[in-house]
View 1 (cartoon, rainbow, N blue to C red):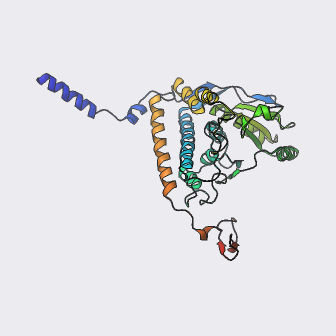
View 2: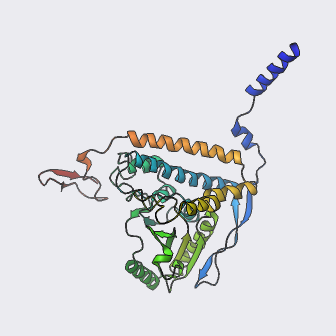
View 3: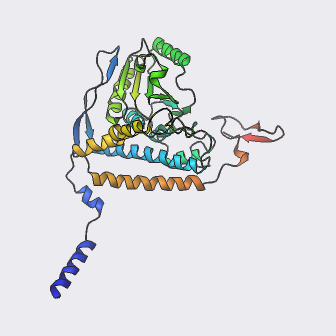
Length: 359
């Protein structure tokens, strides 16, 4: 009986003295970095392109993994808030395309200027906006990055000029290519080719789907946009090309969106559920990075799961803020029309009611 009691006490004490998971994880013998093979880019009007292998440090890998998980969970939460009618109007989600925004940001400088399309939530986060400010903007609250007055399609940050509704309309993009080439502007044109223009497959809409060649007289790269390391190295190459005074360059990031074009699009009337599931199971950007990090001993399943738990908690806290923060009052409707301007009156929907615009 005494031996049995001693055995029970020993097991209890052993359980209470077990070190926390984070201590166990930090004591693992992880590699500091690893050289990883990546898919080569297809080139247009270029003698050479990005390298077919790259160095990934453990710190960078964890940073990219966390960022992509935050974007993924943030978009899934936005889907939920939209269905609960906390978010109204237009809402275009980018889950599935996380490697694009995270890989681009990993290769450029904070002072580089970025402008994008309306599928902008991921780039908003990688450009420095907090999850709270993004979700609060989606729900139209004061704590939003545009004070609750921009919504899904019009968010801004320092050196980030927001999401925009025009996404490469043919005449305008041709004019932009032409001017950039004439003036040798240091501009990287990026096509996030998620394979569908709203609900139309690219093969049905374009006689040539080689969008990286659409610059004609501008060099181009076709990149695996589902691999954050491919995107990072291609963006570094493109940025170096521009900084060297060689003029503009076009990058086509071949990626995939899991949601429909917008929240009003179920996304399965023009493509099969099996197609979406195949992309999720074979080409998911988060899964691909996770596999690389584990196989090269840069991390472990347990450590990455702990990051997942932390991310979910952060998203939940941000969503709580985004649904309880007050909406802007009507007297703020005319605020911030200009960056710097003396106060002036703004007429609202009722011509007899005036609002004051304050910068």
